[in-house]
Image (cartoon, rainbow, N blue to C red):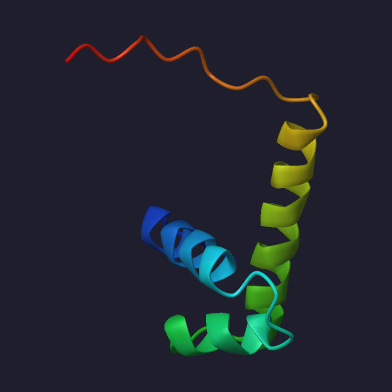
Amino acid sequence: MKKTKEEDKIFENTLAINEDNNNLLEEMAKALLGKLMDDIKDHYNILIEDTNAIESGYVPLPNYPEMQN
């Protein structure tokens, strides 16, 4: 499955908006017209694995420079 940065952003936004929604994958399918449900499930599982790795400390967060006002 080929995914784009735009699709990643749609996934992230849909997840943030519908975090407690039982129909999360259906909401993602609505936002990603033309994508197969199997592709959406695969993309979602990859996103969850990445998130879990970051939250568990296995993947360090980037060291962004401080923003100056």
